[in-house]
Length: 79
Image 1 (cartoon, one colour):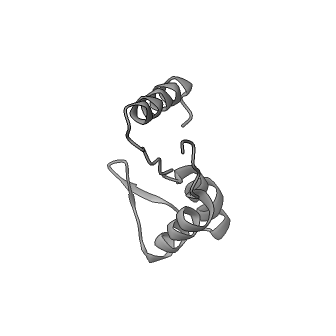
Image 2 (cartoon, helix red, strand yellow):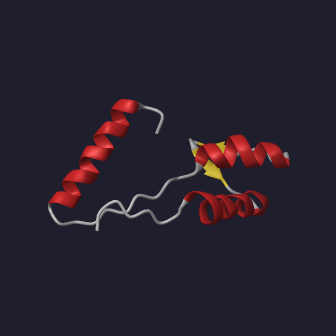
Image 3 (cartoon, helix red, strand yellow):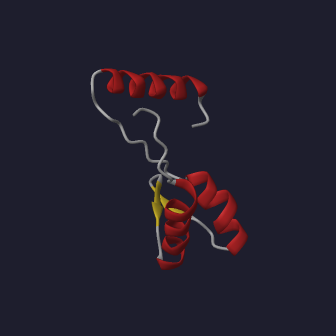
C-alpha cells in the first residue's frame, strides 16, 4: 500500500479484528511486483480493461510465480 493513511487504517482494522477474536488473513495482490518487475523483464505488456487486469496464459504464468513463489508467504503476527 502506497497510501500511508490507508495503510494505517487497514492495520488498525486488522488489530481490531484480532482483539475481538478473529484471525484475519492478509493476502498481498502482488501488482507492483507482477507489472513493474516481472512482466517488464519478460517483455510482456500488461493489459487492463476498466481497471482490471486482463490475464492471458503468459501473464497467468507470471502471476502464479509471483503470488505463489515470492509474495504470499505465511507470516504469523498473532498466536
